[in-house]
Image 1 (cartoon, helix red, strand yellow):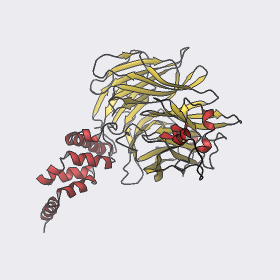
Image 2 (tube, rainbow, N blue to C red):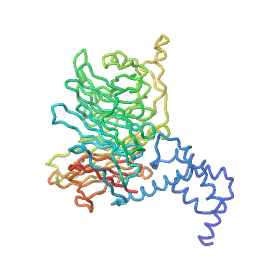
Image 3 (cartoon, helix red, strand yellow):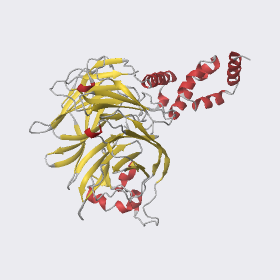
Image 4 (cartoon, rainbow, N blue to C red):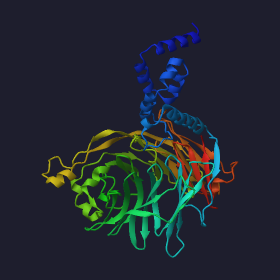
Length: 528
């Protein structure tokens, strides 16, 4: 029996199975397998064309798709979802090459002011590009915010520009109302005060007009005691920020995290339950970062040779109050539950890059959290090979949050309502793999996608002005170290060099990379 005859018989055997069984099998197959099944015969072609199959298969698929995580998959037809899946497969094939090919190169229109972008971020499935310029040299520090629409990427144009009178330290942003509203969160300094603020601006996507200068501030919170807002993360209605070196009444300092619903202004400040290797009062936390996910907040605290990753349910804010100060939240710490956490060993690190949250939403819940730990490097190490560390944590099904005390505490009606914290997802270390990085260099502007499958960063040499752009590719099915190679060499066949890069933005699902240059230009590179 030749192979062709055997294949024909196998195909006939599959096609004679009950249709509901075939669809059930296809649901748990990979997208590439479904496309292969589609090409075998007319019966299987018809079954794989159904809306029902594609509405069921996508929640099980880890391949990032360029579909908004805030859109219900069931509202899309099978043809629309197949088109997105085809683009995802093409991107995977291109990105997995040692030297991925640029499929499209575009440039954004110049801005109406002098200066370069210090920060870039892609929003709404990479259809909106946000750029921020810090003005530190004037008597009143400010930040200029610009938004471009990339719906027609061949002709991107400015749709909003406004200036905020504050010195920005960190920011995050998202788009609401199908991309027509920009929400920007920032930790800022205003004179001698530390503030956490949220700004809202309407984006005229369907008109050639520019929203110039008009914005709202629906949330503004000022620390009343010594302490510094540091990192900030935003997703949907929730915002979180780390507070470093916050003064305690009994003396000493602590590192805390504020969690808030910026629409209702309900918030609480928590002291993460660190394990013995980290003493929050001794100020030995080298780095603490936060990432708001659809159902929980991830807190990453690193010190010396270990890191702790904790997951906090967002509805913990029901234990707080409107614009509640950290000193008020402090009295509630003992009554808070213990949150799921995990401790992992680290080597001496230079920086930790956390996967972003832009491709998660109510219809695409997170199943993992990834970290890239870059090692420290000095000019004495230019000839010494060092390894970075790739960490991937699985976020599992929700589990009940246990109380910090075993015995129930009598509560009045209001307290009982406030004590109802639903669930928190579990967390476990899935992969911890070291991988090689170029000798004698350090990373800048690192970006890691929501699924941790793709990342980019600038590689700056310690011994020369040699700069190139690296790409990371990780296949969770192989469970080996990620592949790292050159995305853009020091002398690419492009209108710019990586050495002129000032800011980066990257979207994992679309393969879109935006590069802001020191001369003010912004280039948009597509890899699919």
